[in-house]
Image (cartoon, rainbow, N blue to C red; front, side, top):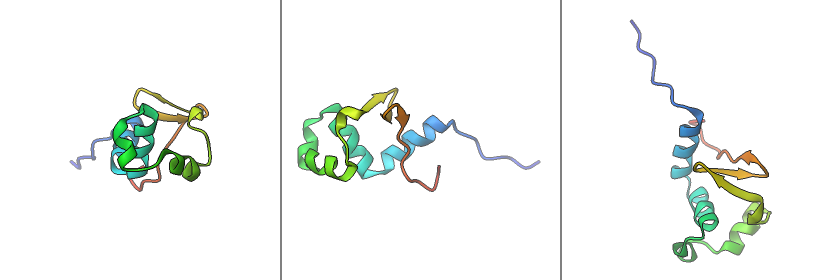
Length: 78
């Protein structure tokens, strides 16, 4: 009998991809307003990279939402 790999919920896969992506970690830090972010990335640089205002983002249950849509990072695991 072949054993299939365990299937994880999409939400869990996205959260794992967030942990592996430095830009995503920086975005989360800015959105959570962590003081440590000032040492890793300038928030105005993030704004320039994302080409939008951080007020258009929200965090719900650990997922980043942009204009009410889940932000999914580019990851081969997804």
